[in-house]
Image (tube, rainbow, N blue to C red; front, side, top):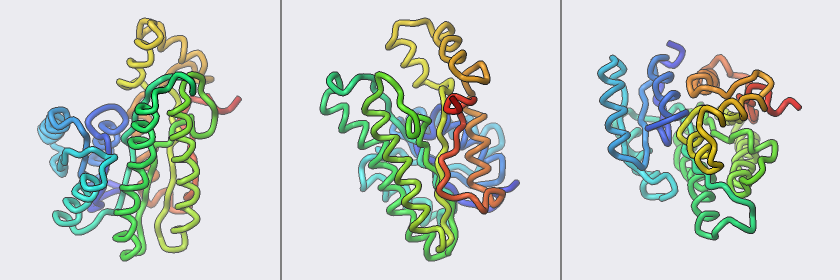
Length: 255
């Protein structure tokens, strides 16, 4: 129960890494305000988690790239629970393509979801953390923030921005009690992974083996493995860590 009595916001929490992290934070004692653009999926997640005895969860439907929606999520957390101690900026979007292939509207969508949302949630959460002199902010930056990835121009550009924003925020807020870190995931078995396999026309199982072999550990990761790192960064166990881009990638970035 490292996170007992802590109030957390998780974006994109209805599936994948966001769902696994929401569950892990709840299991560690936190109260979680989870948001997602998919209202039906979000409500289903809340129902399932409460049925499993993890009752300290609220769901707010939101488009994370829209300022009014972001402020509504944060206002719900503050109005209901008084503060936000932990922010996990997880929501993300991937559309494959080289620069000359990426439609302008897809570029803007990637920027809005992957980078603008991180800015907006941070912008409106930080003031309350500054008042209390404490907080932990975690960004989902992806391993694409530190190494290139072919056929993923927009994704790499946005995640690279998240990585540098992580460092900038850590420098700005470190002496005022707010730690800011990022997880940099390799290939994780999520809906995004399935989408990638379909894009390349490769059966999911075959694609998983092919990509898994690119990771020194010999497989792709599971959302629960990422969630464990998120919980660590959210807790005081990581009290001397800030500005870090932490690989959760099975050794992918080691070579």
